Image (cartoon, rainbow, N blue to C red):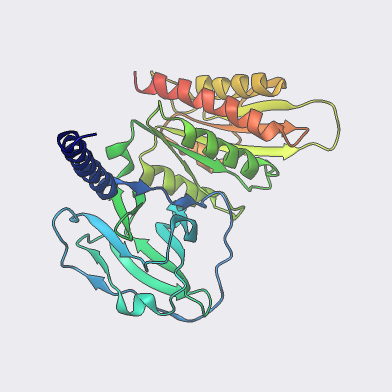
Length: 333
């Protein structure tokens, strides 16, 4: 290779390197890493009293308005961050294993939003693990990501502003109807809906940890979410081997032309029973003491499932999700 050819190769290599660097910088500036969502598990918060108010810097930079910017120590990766979004409590908890004790005593979060009622840092141990606890003034849909600049960015929106449909599922712990596997089915439903990229549907759960939520609070939450549909979910795992069965209850006093409650209950019962290979036992008017259904002014139903094996939770959730999608299409047509 003569000098002229070597020069051409060097020029091409330089151009390629420059282009590659620009591409990498663009990607680095826009790359966001999703943070683990632990809403489906129960996290035991430490009993420590070592907590303090988080510093808040109101001097936001260009492009940061309307966001909550949380700084991180350089050693933190996405594996060190766990999100617990407690929607019904209007609370967002972010658990961070920062490995740098006292980091948030000196490093402020940056925001110009006015929806924070409180912002507290709770020390989980002496090695830098903390829980950042943000209490909001209402129900918001939070979009959370980890940026390449070692910050967590959080955006808050009203659910109806960003989703085509909103559904509330209440895995009920009422002794009247039974509980058992309702939480397990709800967690499977959450996973299924999270993986669905075709439908811009948000399903809120009143609880996924097994804590008791009163019917009054569940009803309030339905209104806060401006939900299109309400599903009260009750399930028990049977001790016998007589097969699974499904039934549903509905509010007989309130009707919408697009989708009445009896039709919605029938959708839920048939779809879930089909997936489970279960007996569809029928749909019935809600009991008098079912305050949640009897006060609802949106299509609502209570689904009661009795199933046999551990694998049935996923099947039930698949049937339930298919029915919800069908009902959403009817409501929003």
